[in-house]
Length: 204
Image (tube, rainbow, N blue to C red; front, side, top):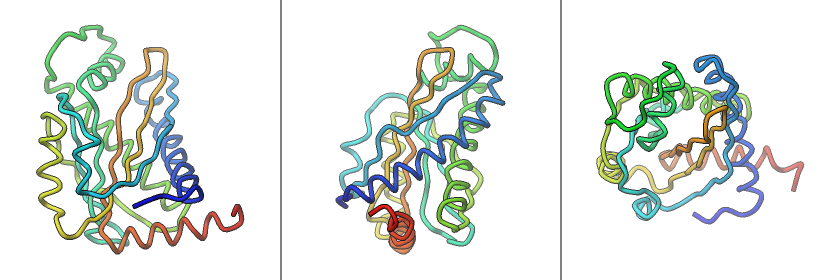
């Protein structure tokens, strides 16, 4: 899928509204001011997804898209190990960065994933008027490309395109990065882009 400039602007607007929602909740949870932006949005063919995912150990939090669009596909948060550890340390007031991901990190990853995805799906309701809800999350701690291989196997034939929102979180600590991958089924993809096109009409 090639995005034209208007579609890219629309998706960036959507992403940054979701990011602003997430930043507010994360700030409350971490008891520290957080800013979250989406500096880059990409739309790619699912067959090329492997080119956009590294082999670093990551926490991958997977949600099915539900609500008005039952079985609408999947939405995934992927955070490198270093990001998860830094956020857990902020939450707990600890400083140990040279460690493997533990149960506390896994709980933190699920909670942060819940916050980010709920915020993004709230943004769709606010911006587009379509209610999408996340299923309970599933967590994988693995090399990112291995985790995504199993996701792609589950959606084979139903999902053609992937929207990638690369996120940056800044706070008193160094910036941390993660990505949100939206794997909508063909019907939801069409619906989203039709709504985004209508939204951007006054600007075109």
